[in-house]
Image (cartoon, rainbow, N blue to C red; front, top):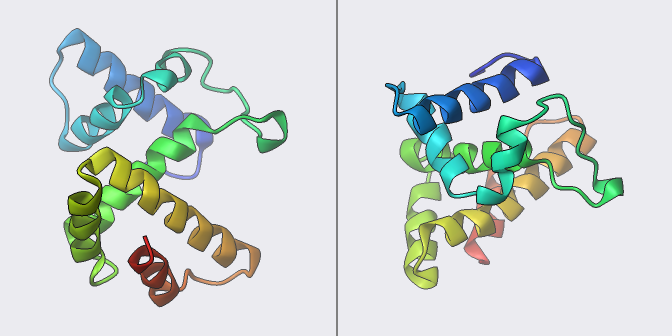
Length: 138
């Protein structure tokens, strides 16, 4: 686990990475990845620089910016490690098809989120083959 189980600790890592990025301070490799994702999501800059304890609920029509950015990081880690096996090739094909890495990640995030939700609701590990099948249909 990158930051532990504490929501505030996780969000603080995002805020710290962004603060260091904005100030031009040295960043760890992980902070570079985090700040890159934040930079691509200007709509979330206030969340990263504001109250880190804000609740974001679907019932209120809100997207959790930290969850969304975390899914981007998850996709990038999957692609870098090709885990599950074949995800990197599927990613490159989707990037070629869409012509945009960020847009391809957004498409993949939908599949990843669905797979994670399904696994959580059934109290089991994510089904990697089912996830890859969803990606193949993009």
